[in-house]
Amino acid sequence: MAQYLFSVWHLGAYPTLSEQEMAAMYAAVGAFNDMLRDAGALVFACGLEDAVSSVVIDGTGAQVTSRPGRIADGPEVLGGFWVIEAPSLAAAHELAAKASAACGVPLEIRPLQDV
Image (cartoon, rainbow, N blue to C red; front, side, top):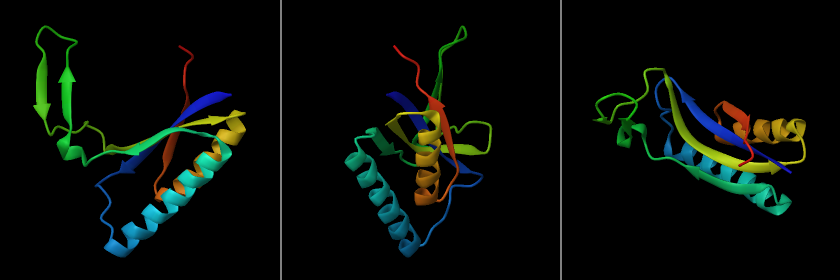
């Protein structure tokens, strides 16, 4: 079975949710994760800490730099991801739609390369 990466992107400012909204979102994501586990489709999943905890390391030039707390120049912030197995790209798209509905934000889906 092919594997796919579902990237959870927060567009614009990091979403500000009430405690009740956050609890509902966590419950929906938990139910989605349970469905993936039950189907044998979940390889790995996790959320990421707030983007202010990130550090960008650039080792491509003459000088290696570390910029604590720097976020990518674009408005998107990676909030978490799933790695899933699906029998087809169409099946992966169906699962991604459910994942997006559960976490309340758009997802990027990409097939993983064989290594």
